[in-house]
Length: 281
Length: 311
Image 1 (cartoon, rainbow over the protein chains, first blue to last red):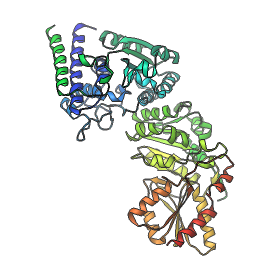
Image 2 (image 1 turned 45 degrees about the horizontal axis):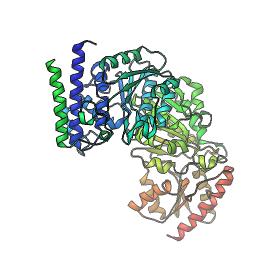
Image 3 (image 1 turned 180 degrees about the vertical axis):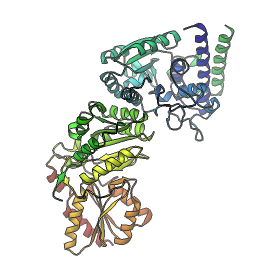
Image 4 (image 1 turned 90 degrees about the vertical axis):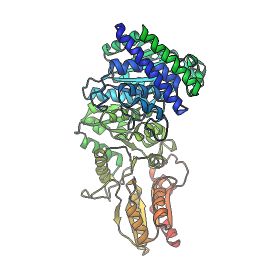
């Protein structure tokens, strides 16, 4: 990836992170940690890879994205807003009664959301259904899904993993946002889903492990997934929960709590500083 | 009423008949021989997917397919469709109002020998409490055929309930059916028997028995429990003044409850309910279980007498 593109993606990801903080702080609740850890992947998909059109969000030929870890809606909403699906200003209404930005993604209310999710484990199955439809209709669209590492504790994920391989869904790429933390603590302490890459490999998936915050690695993995035939690809993305906000990084407590006003201001300041660092380089 | 066909068999046949529509996709969870989606598979194998013994996965896969414009029929036993996969049906199908038809077979105690673990008596209560879900429990093969075809044409989630046991064909082939519209099978002025599923044929027998006692019983088939035909129920209450509901389901949350909800809000009259009296089923021959749990014409007659005394 050329440096200009990479710099632009980094800027966009930072704007998306600012939107996450704004949304969650306005709501006084929500899930910043896993939204921030997924932000670079969302940025790459929506600003570099996916065939989507904010003017025609239901285009039958579009690429699909399913946020199986639906609680990270601030990440998805901020990405969609910055991509032009709805006004960035609307992020301030997140989780509020007069807003369409539900706590968890709602495909009927939010332009650009391809599947309603929130109950963990179900989104990946829905993504399997979309990929199956793509095969049936002989369409070239691709289906992307993002899973949490804690979400892998849901048995349904493995039912879906079996089905995706059984039906040779090479048009499906799943990301595991491997930040190592879930709401009650370390995934290895709560209910260890590891070894994650080995488990998917045993189910027959093409497995690629990357640094979730390195756009070159994300691009290489996505391209490799597109080139892989007859089986689905999982990109095990090693990430930092709360990435980009110093006091949130690697802290389980920021899985599902919102920053107070001063904390949000500090977070936005840090992100702005990172942004001006990028500008001045 | 001599011919007997299980509604699951009629379901499979209906799917095979409408399968030329290339938009239809059928999913099953390792029970296609029992749910009869195998009939569709014989003709359209490329659009029949076995998801294996993974009902939760099947329901959310159905949602994904439907989000891409498919009309999806997802089938398994009622116990697993409504019970095991409730969350998936609720969140992935119901909440986004996706176009999935849940073909739930082997409902109720007439499953027979498999016993209580496989006898869903709660499914209608569960499904009708999901906002926007249409819930259908046909009485015979003829109505099943028509209602499955209508469900395929409408856009939105539908729960279709079928039985394992062969049941009498009560409708002539030219009967008109409409989702959400009850059918007055027999007119009557003293009491109205409101039934669905195989209990409709039991209700018809009960009405004949009551006639011999000089009691004129109306028989109404409420094949669509949701949205319910309030008009036909209110009219029956006004004209007969007493209602007996009959269902192969727990008396809590099913047809009896749905009818009572209509009546208390509009025109309260005495109601008696025939159904499973809040207990689990058990193994046995369907005929023995029908006796054991009181899903009989005799019991309907008794309840009719009781409700008449309360008028």
